[in-house]
Image (tube, rainbow, N blue to C red; front, side):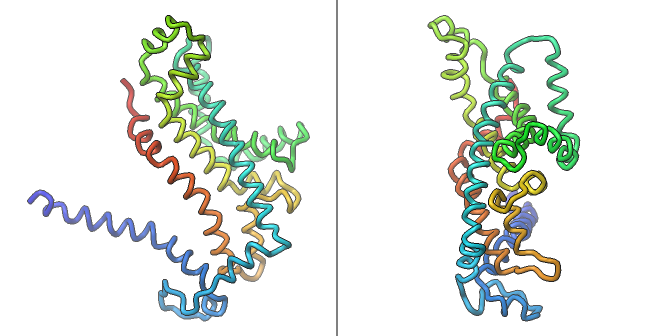
Length: 278
């Protein structure tokens, strides 16, 4: 009887699911439609293409002498290295904030929180000045460092909550058994914080994979573009090639989907336990 009373909750969930999934299904459908069908001017909602074609994907992968594959390679390299650097910096910083007492600890905590209060667009100019002064514009390293500064503060706050939930007695026992401080961190703390590390890695990867403004500002040659900038090539002043844009969007989404599926069980447990302490 209780379930029957809550029927409206299920209705709302179904509606919310349709709203969330609908645009994705529409983009997927559009990626298999011909240009004539897309620009026919019909007002009918048609999720099933009248003429199924894969030419949009073929064009995207081969256009500009296969430049899309170069952009894909750039995105993979930058996202993976940003993830590795972001997890390393976040894990070590969060562990220090969780376990050690030092002067200015609260100030460091507040500084990480403060950076989350401002939109990322405000960081573009100062980051550009810093990276330019280091001579790292239009390079992998410059963009990786910029992305890390954006991702690390949130990841540090997230991981600190995980480290706070790990009993310190486990580390004391490991020290008694002869482990060094780094060995305790590596062999005891990190395995127990694996769900938090998964969230950190996923967030860092998404930050680097989807970011557009910083990449557009830092990368000045076409061969160094990432995928979000590359997709912009299908938009010009007078029209948008929606059939190519949709196909490119689906290709860009696939790596994120694969990463999510691989880390799904850690993400679910991490999101449920990372916000608790004690």
